[in-house]
Image 1: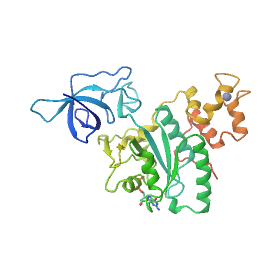
Image 2: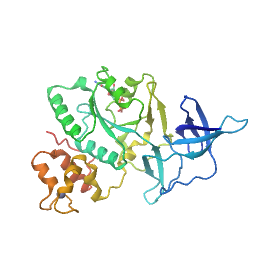
Image 3: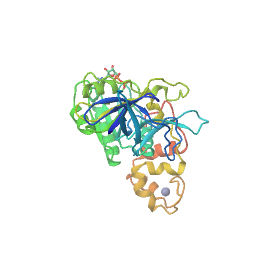
Image 4: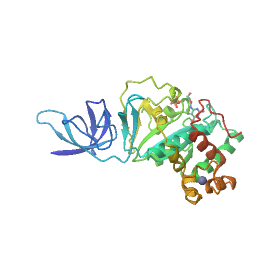
Length: 314
Ligand code: GDP
Ligand code: ZN
């Protein structure tokens, strides 16, 4: 009998598959699988929807079909290799946790994350955490940032994992979705997950080793089921989010606000940097595209990623 489920843990040779009824079954892969268009070391990843069959007299399943993915995040095996490793598939939302205080997340970092999510075709949202620490200055910034990112159609929430403020809104946002939390170290990802579902511990990616590409963790990606519906992807490899190679001409499309104007530029190969009659630059001049977002575009375009990104807001 064929059963369906979602892969919640993968070691590369074993896969834990969760069925709709909540049963979890250890599965193996039947024979060799090849995915069209993707050269990968692992044909099945966390988040994959699979069809499997129970083996007679054994408590294991044999995966025989893998559903089409609507997105996936990858890690290149090495810089030289064209082969990539799929970390997770079918992600409904990537949630960037940021703080305006203790520590400060830079706008450059936020924008780079959002552009990467767009490149992966993953919906993104921003959760501003630690609002309990914000004074007047931070609250004013919060309002301005929420205006900028909501205008680009990214859902924004202002919460406190510590006090519990607006945690119900986070639950509402992520309910029944497969999500991942990301953000620099110390913004409160673990605290947030714990506030959402007490007792649930995640390893969380430490983006502090963002530039330390040589270091590889050996823990396997895993998804945790949420009691109110949905899953949190737990992988220490979220720094891979920064490893996408952007083709320069694609970057503007990854900014929803720029996407709205770029078709009105005089030249259809406009880079929106120096060309005359550029609708994007006009929109920046008119204040229709926030300057901070345009500056992030220029930075990404020029591959000008600063590790200690300055806060362009002051
Ligand atoms: P992670 O590195 O992103 O997983 O961050 P943690 O969850 O470990 O939190 C880092 C520090 O921030 C800890 O000392 C938490 O207690 C603290 N923290 C987390 N959320 C909040 C919050 O909403 N308000 C305050 N004041 N502190 C918080
Ligand atoms: Zn232009």
